[in-house]
Length: 312
Length: 291
Image (cartoon, rainbow over all chains, first blue to last red; front, side, top):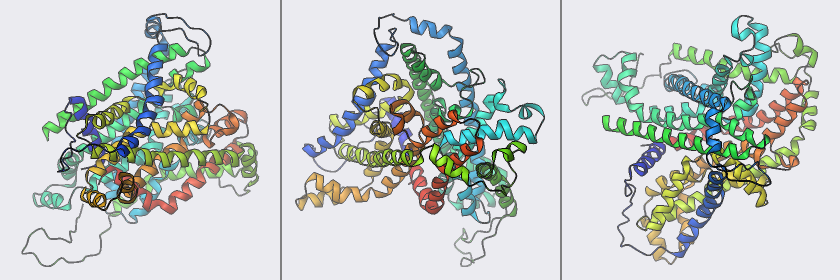
C-alpha cells in the first residue's frame, strides 16, 4: 500500500463523510492531550488560517466588487461573473486548459507506463537509463521551456522544413498547444514514471510465473496482470497529474507566453494577468469559478476511484 | 519475453540455479534510442551556450562548438547577477525545506496521538480540505496581504512554499506515524521525558526516511518555482534564479548564446547534484510512492 494511495483514500473517506476511518486505537484510555501537543499544531493551523483561509475569503469578497487592485471599490453584485461568461478570452482559456490537461494526462501516462515497464525489464545498465531519463525532474520548468522555444521555433524549422514543424509549431495558432503538450510531457514525466516503477516493484514475480504456466504471452501478461495490479497507481498519477496540469503556468509562460494571440493562455495565466490590467476583482471572480471547477473535478475523480475500488 | 526465474515455484524443484541475468537486447535498444529524446535537447543547450552569435545563426545550432566561446558564461554570470540570485534561491529553498519537514511532522504527530479528540481530528481534516485550494485561486488577495504584512520578499515566498505543502506533507507524515510503535514513546514517558523531548529524541529520528522524501520534493519545488517569487517578491534585487532569468531573457532577446549560457548555468549545478545523489534521490522519491 502506498502513501499516496492512502492519501487518496483518506480524502475519499473525508468526501464520503466517513469521519472515523483513520482512528488509531492506542490501547490507552482516553487521555487529556498535553499542552505540548496543542502548541505543536499551532504553527500549522495559524499559518493555514492567515495565508490560505484569509486570502480565499478576501478573494470571495472582492469578486463581488469592482476593486482594481488599489483605491476605492464598490459592490457590483454578480456583474463580474456575468461578464466572465461573455468573455471570449476566458472561454478560450478554459478550452485550451481542459484540452491541454486532458491530452497531456493521457499521453503522459501511456508514455510513462511504457517506459516504466521497459525500465523494470531486463535491460542492460538499468541504472544508467534511469539516471538519464530522470534528469528533467531536477530542472526548472521555465528554463526548460525557454530552451525548447528556441529549439522548436528556430532550430527545428532549419532541419525539417515541411508542415507545421517547418513554420515553427509554437507560432501556429492552431497547433501551438501540441508543442506545449510535448514540452510539458518532457519536463514532467519522471515523477509519473517513478510512481509506476514503485507500483511495478510491488508486484511479485510469482504472479508472472503463474501467468506463464497458464501460457500467457507477454502482451497478455501486461494486459491482464500488470495493468489491473497497477490500477491504483494509474489513479494516483491521473489525479495528481490533472490537478497540476489545470494549474499550468511556468512552462507555458516560458514557451509561448500564452500566444500566439491567446491560443495557449491557461486559466492560471488568465487570472494572474488581471493584476497588470488593474482588474483584480474580475480576476478573483475567475478564480472563484476555477475553484468550483477544480473541486467538482476532484470529487468526480474520487467518485471514479471509489467505483474502481468496488470493482476490484 | 524469455524469463529465467531463479526461484522455482514448486517445492519439489531442484535448488535455485544461479544463472547470469539474461539481458534483453530489444529493451536495451528501445531505451537507448528513447534516451535521445532527453539527451539531444540537453546537448543542444550546451552547444548553443558555447557558440558565438555568427555561428549559431548559420546553422540549426546542433553543430559541435569547436570554437568554444567560454566568454558567454562569464557574460551570463555578470548580466544575470548570478551570485545574488543564487544566494536568494538558496535561502528560500533552505527555509522551505526545513519548514516543510518540521511543521507538518509536529502537526501530524500531535494529531495522530490525539485522534480521539475532536479538536485534533477536525484540525487535520480542515487542513486536508485546504489541499483543494490551488495557489491561483487566492493569488490576487495574497499579493496584497503579503505586502501588508511586510512579507513581499524571499522570506514571504519561503513561508508560502511551506503553507502550500502543509496539507500533503502532513498526510505523508501522519500515514508514516500511524505505523510507528507507540510503546517507544510510552516507555520514554515512563522514564520521565516531556512530550517535547519524546518528539525530539524518539519520534523525529524515526521520521527521517519520510523527512528525506518530503525534503527532496520541497527542495525541487522551491528551487525551480517561478510563479510565486515572480508575483510576491517586490524588490527585483531579491529575485530568485528562475525569475532573474526570465527578466534577463526579455532584456536581451537578441543575444541568444549568452541566454543559453545562463540556462546552462542554472541547469549544471542541478544536474551534477542529481548525478552524485541519484541513487539516493530516486530511492527517496520512490519511498513517497510506496512504503
